[in-house]
Length: 78
Image 1 (cartoon, rainbow, N blue to C red):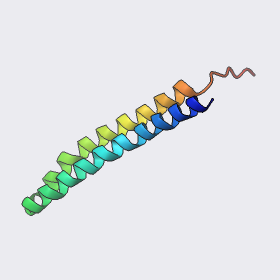
Image 2: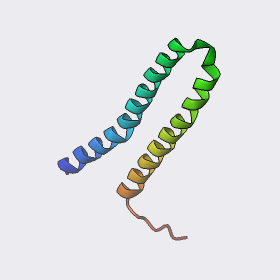
Image 3: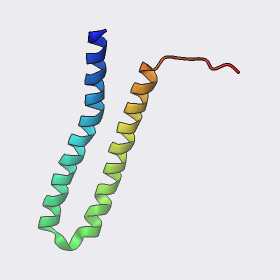
Image 4: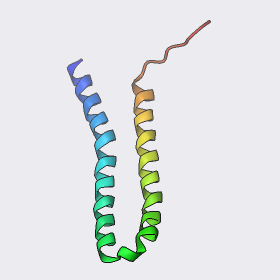
């Protein structure tokens, strides 16, 4: 039982931290671009928006798949 819990912790750690690292990397690129081109703020924000949406949807989907894979299948009968 101990090994199963460690695997669950590691999977959840990856599911949360990989998107956080990706967003931090995008944020550092964003700050650098704003420093070089302050007049193009709106264009830089719009280029970043789609990337953030893709990362968030992918991470939510991975966490949902992890939950569905690890939760027991219970038939609810009325």
